[in-house]
Length: 110
View (tube, rainbow, N blue to C red):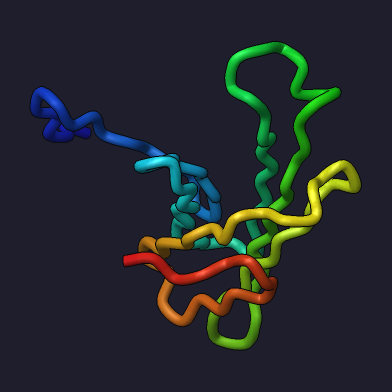
């Protein structure tokens, strides 16, 4: 396979059902890729980005992509160490029409 990769733009290859967090201008956006299977699952950790104390000072979020009728639903589950107030996370679907956001704190991004 040959893929364009001009300077300043790197290609990204992701498996079907992948949920990849991207931070742009201090806002987190999840890029959710079309799923050929019935589900997808990813977990990511939120920490200070400076130390190795993610296990002590950070928390995790799990994202589950599951088939729902003719489409898919995305759910978020927070670890018990998550703070009470978490910023809203944008969601951008790629080749995933009819995605329903099944948890609060998620919003559609363009």
